[in-house]
Image (tube, rainbow, N blue to C red):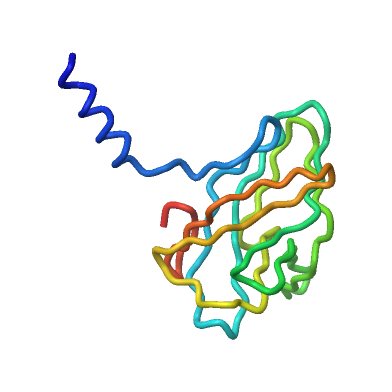
Length: 151
């Protein structure tokens, strides 16, 4: 049994950290982003936000030192198949519900990048809620063609 303790400690250290951050009622999973082409174009980040509490929560803002401006945006496609994007404002997350920030829908838009988003690196992103709560998470940067958090 003594020999298992060091093995377990080493195994736990080598396992990838879960892509998870949160508080008692709001949790964030599977945060990820794509590498950027320099800094002249905006970046984006994606994640799943769960509200396990009994009260609704409202995501009101984002901040990161990676970008001068960070906002939640929504991409939509109209009946003529034209896609557009605009700030989404406050995002309400009802009690017991989940909101996905994903390509082609809601996403964290990172404008005026302060440095390139390089595959294999990560950046800190803070989610700001109407009750004053903030959740800080580390967002891994995947390849430029990534389609999800595991790519």
